[in-house]
Amino acid sequence: MGKMKTFLITGGAGFIGANLIDRVLKENNRVICIDNFLLGKQENIIPFLTDVNFHFIEKDITIIENLFDSIKDYEIDYVFHLAANSDIQLSGQDPLADYKSTFLTTLSVLECMRRKGIKKMFFSSSGAVYGEKPNSTLTENSNLAPISYYGGSKMASEAFISSYAHMNDLDVTIFRFPNVIGPHLTHGVIFDFIKKLKQNPKSLEVLGDGTQNKSYIFVQDLIEAILMIALSGDKGVNIYNIGGDGSTTVREIADMVCAKLGLKDVSYIYSGGDRGWKGDIPTFQFDVSKIHQRGWYAKHNSTEAVQATLDAIL
Ligand SMILES: NC(=O)c1ccc[n+]([C@@H]2O[C@H](COP(=O)([O-])OP(=O)(O)OC[C@H]3O[C@@H](n4cnc5c(N)ncnc54)[C@H](O)[C@@H]3O)[C@@H](O)[C@H]2O)c1
Image 1 (cartoon, rainbow, N blue to C red):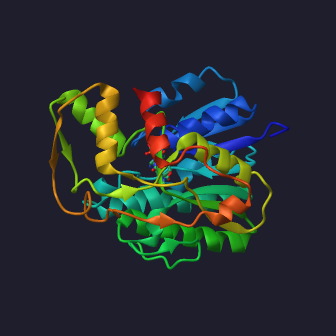
Image 2 (image 1 turned 120 degrees about the vertical axis):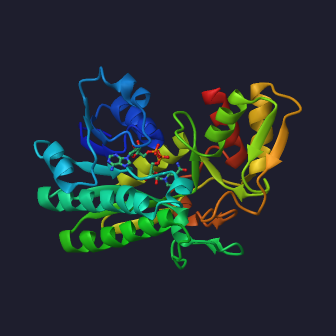
Image 3 (image 1 turned 135 degrees about the vertical axis):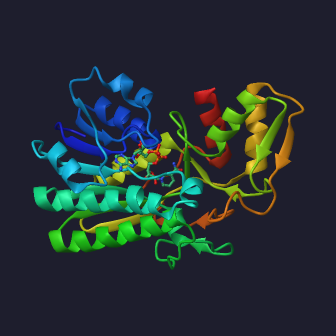
């Protein structure tokens, strides 16, 4: 990365943020991390606290002034905006959770960038913006029709990014992630299965019918791509789908978690239906040729990503 740069990483106490901070600090940069521990964890940032180039601020950034006051004295080169509500199932019960944590955090970031004249941003969007299109291969130009409040809030965030970028000459990289997994997980199917099996190693409640078939990307592969493309100096707003090869069913994940924990004869109790919860998208297919054209390929396919995650966390 060359000369020391200053990164503002929102949501840095979360799963992807912690992995990103680790990598950015190792390359001799300064990190300002802001998080309110909604889902993030103290333990994710403890290893960085002894690094003089790491600055942590505990604040809720849905409030613009909270964010502005926190960063007003820093010269920031890049904003990596990861703060959001990542628990899609939870916000199904409370639409305002995503409006606040997923959308308003983005608006705050954009407004602070405008006031401070910061020009470069990375945004973690999601495949959830496309909605449910079971028989389509989703390209970056596919129609956006989210079916969850989370997907709607990510889509609204992308829309505001587009308008702020045009009005203020921002350069923004947007990635639409599939399911991301790896060390420091804070949520998701692998996290849930491990938690449940540690409580009860005899039976496992599985949401849906277990046939949900999704693509998983290993977090280190994702971070390679984020840093390669977001720091490449591209102009304007550029959107990429990202993902590795293949997909993995929920049933396969349950089998892999049980095998890794050394558990045999666990009975699976399915909640039934073709999906985990209303708003869940049971299967989708990304076209990732655009990011491949930039020379990035995932090192792990979906099932290898699941295994690498289990090896890292168990
Ligand atoms: N993990 C995935 O599979 C996945 C998939 C698609 C998109 N994403 C996106 O990637 C980003 C990171 O996801 P993650 O998996 O690391 O989730 P995470 O929940 O572990 O991290 C998000 C962090 O944001 C923080 N946060 C939330 N609201 C905040 C607020 N108001 N002020 C300050 N901090 C706040 C949380 O405490 C948490 O630490 C999110 O934007 C998420 O929507 C993740």
